[in-house]
Image (cartoon, helix red, strand yellow):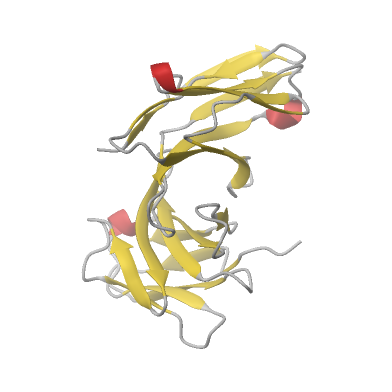
Length: 114
Length: 116
């Protein structure tokens, strides 16, 4: 069964460092998303991406964040200068055209900022 | 504004008991989708169900059933004959449907413990 794949499963970084979280969406999907979940809290929307541009972003998604689909298969989330409060689980999701709003999630990347 | 409320933070039941997880939502739109996702201890988010706002039929899938009532803006989830493997955090969620790439708004989740 096709699935969304995220790497790494756990990323540890020092405050102020840049991190790139990687996702491989389901192959025929066209809509891509990032969400985050601070430990013990709810899942929050960060950004949606379609046709090589951002469709919508939340207040959380400030200038420190960027997304890219560099090669037609990967979908990345970059945090330019990590802060302690960026520590969270980051989920990538994708959905197919014609299957409105069924977003399938990856297993997540746990980001720990020290 | 969109909002999903899961008033039950944590529930514990003994195996084989039935349990209902409550979900109340708010939206200004007449067209929307409601979801339930399961997050087991391993951390991934597992899609369970999506319900269109125009379809108020209740749904049953094995031991899982969902009760959608627009009149009370509720979308409750019942597990019958619960099993230890049902232990997880369950999230109710909402998406307003006009655009195909609408974000999903999650509730805070209900942590369900099934005790052997």
